[in-house]
Length: 68
Image 1 (tube, rainbow, N blue to C red):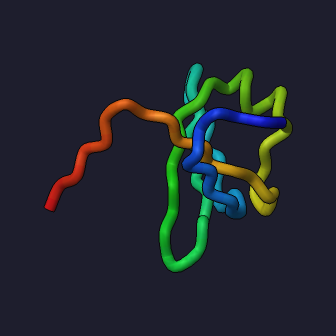
Image 2: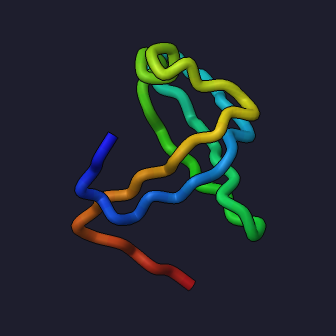
Image 3: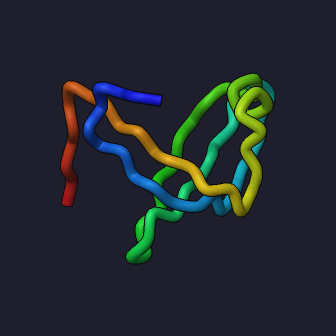
């Protein structure tokens, strides 16, 4: 699979929490950093996502906000 997004962070899924229609998938990308994605339950099922799987967090955004 080729993507135009340059921010591709490889890691391991540490949790998948399903809600009524949306799931939160947490990916440990190393160094103590966790990336959380909110995706549909259908996407979780189609991709077969489960804890322990290797996965990529792909980030493509026109705006990135920083707070302190």
